[in-house]
Image (cartoon, rainbow, N blue to C red; front, side):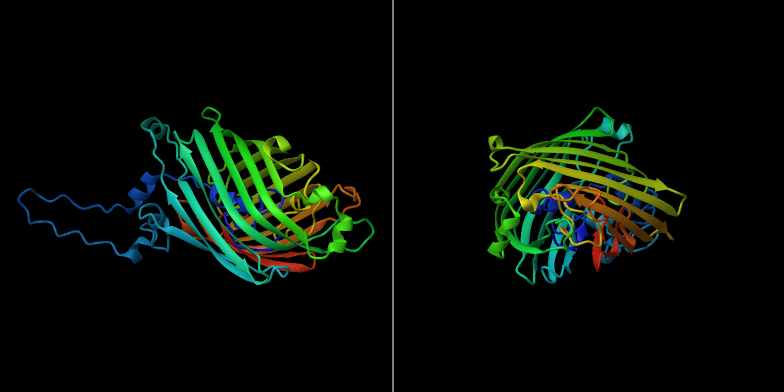
Length: 419
């Protein structure tokens, strides 16, 4: 869709295959860090010696400056942990768009963190509750594409229940690439304009790391081709405006941190069913599976792997088909009824704050008119760095530079590039 934007917990320009704007926002607010308020207050607490009952009066406590709040009391480095959690500040992430198809663009995404209530029993078990998160975003590009919206993720009863919801509006001037056998890539310009929403309620299974979710995806957009003659590549129902579907999601998450993990696994399985029964114009299904693994090699090195697969069936609007999602490839460049992606990343933590990384991946799209064996494999590679900007949240920010087939792009990252 749009080659790059900022990834603030994946604030890249939203994915077409789901609620275009809503899915991007959900990625933004669902990167929930594992932390605990007590840790932050302990780190920032000043120890004052006791004063004898008849001794001199204690000196008035000095007011902490705003600048000191932005430094870690442990190592003195720049750190936003206390500003974000103790002082209820916002992490304002820039959204930078460099996709040639839409022109350069800019926007902002403020993210707010709040610590949920935690029971004494949960504290006794040593559990760390993720904070509640609320986020908003807005951006505009040179070719007239724009989007704005808001969303949040909230935790209840010691994270037994979760609610995540996002809603937004956007207009996107994009390109569609039909996969045509034996023909050079052909680009079709189009516009989608409308409303996007994703609502999800999750329940933890006992005290395990498994969660089950019920979700509702709603998209109401008008799609229009720039050149009417290109309609020969589509069926009339592929221009359907309303997609409304109910889905089930099962997730296992053993990562040591959900923003910038260094160990653990996250496995996700999603099935979403769109039908006129739920208000959809067309009947179709969307199935997704993904596994993220973070393997610590030693104290300084970590290997990450990502395997993902998505498939749709039924009468799917053309703009909601899966596409190869890799850093360095224009979103939508390789798009069809099925997609598969493999990606690996090697991280080097050369000190307590800074990380250098290298990554590479491969992906394929097939299904409509091209089989898996006849489809092209797209390869990518890249380099990047991260800085630990909020130690108590485990939040790292940085920049990735990626190369794909005939193009390159940079990504401002907040947290891991994988969601």
